[in-house]
Image 1 (cartoon, one colour):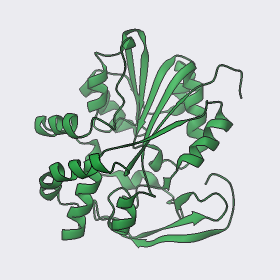
Image 2: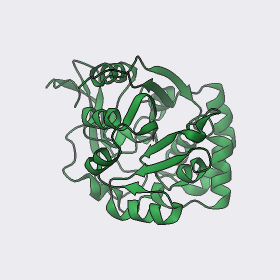
Image 3: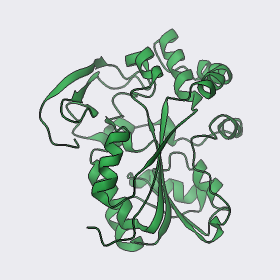
Length: 283
């Protein structure tokens, strides 16, 4: 997907849809040239994978409170002085982050590739949410100060095209903030096919630090900064899947507190990437 090489070795095979239990098992391979891990073959129609996707469902008050407590390290938190800035959340999920950022930034936008979900989110949040990257770039080129992409890039088929969109939208000196599951984490090695971060077949690709460095250099960003963040949901859902064969919601919530403590002690399941658009005429 990234380097164009044709040789790959099996990584994980026959991976079921443990989350929604709707799709046939898929395989993942590791590129022999650049070590990128991706699904192979890629699905022809990814939209079919997201019917009744729980991530797009509005959260309850208790769930939103739990997110504020247990997921603080993952989601972008602006520093002082953001009141005059513009933020774009690329991949909005249930819209919770959009709602939280409305009072923190001068202007907030969202992007969701599905027309119906984008329209629903715009109505629920009062924030403009585009469903076309082409329209977004045409209307907001060079106007965005911060782009956030929380657990988004593992879903995309075109990493280079997505980074080109990021660069087009950001102002020179603008910040790109990304969170992705870490396929090399101890959690992934321990749970393998049952690791919730795998989320087969919806997760197509697992870029790592070396791949983000390549994308940054090619797309006109500075050298990325990397860190790990505690995200207990992945670990908790993996335990539930191991015990019951599916992502059992009640068990997931029951395991959250101890998994949060483990994730704080060994925060490797989520990779955080931050980079800045360079001030030049690249591309």
